Length: 360
Image (cartoon, rainbow, N blue to C red; front, top):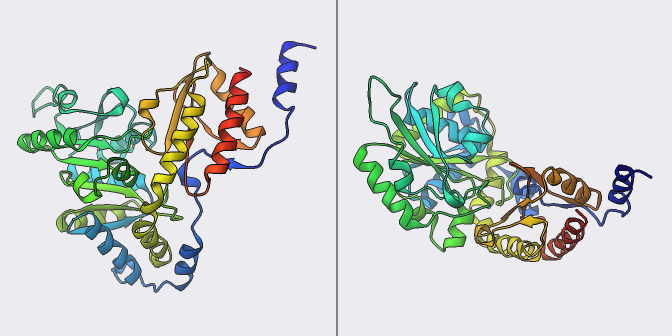
């Protein structure tokens, strides 16, 4: 029997242990309370500003973040791209970390929609400091594209869910303000960062001109993200949302779940963080992988396979045994913990992962 045939037989030699989906916290399903609220939601036409449940969600988000106004949008990508459009002019640059969501996962829309190019900077564990940023800031010139916006991400998905400390943000806020450069936060998982740092989101995001955060990841809403900022910016954002096809009419059915996501679901995120840490600790000693435990600060675990090409094989092995995860970047694997996968399931996933990694 050939080596390849033996390997194929080995991969499929064990039956699945049951589906444990750790691909992303986007796979979370709405809770029973959310489904009940959705069924009973009072609705109207949100494009006319007449959906009372959407209006309540927007007012609640503004209150939680200490802002004048908020806007409900279908996706985090739309929220980020609205913000880029608000703050920039065509031909400018947006400074961001090299693994940012707006770089890798938003279909080059900063260029396509806002006419901007991304000036990326690689930072250790994804945490940009003012020292990183200052080195690539460009003032208006006849020779270079000027810096129109600084966009940061907290927690940082592709850096392994790392969080940026408030002191680091503070220096960036003050320095950018002195230079007249606006700041946007991709806060898709800002509540995870808030829990990890034990700092309220209103404080942790106070120096940004705009903030986007997701309701549909670890907070379990089926659809939706929010953009918060000044009333004037959000009025403009509403028009940009319409231009992108984001007018959702009777969206109160979705906003009802969003209200529960915003008000109730952050309270349990520490459980996800603990589960991610558990998985990481079980894997960290394996010689086949490289895993920096210092990056496991929230609900994401990313590790690199030392042997080239093994990440995809591992993901397929785990899938056959009922554990779903993702290949990310160059030969790396990602696990994301969330509401729908409890500690018992994470213990099974970790055991299976250890067994399968040991075979590679």
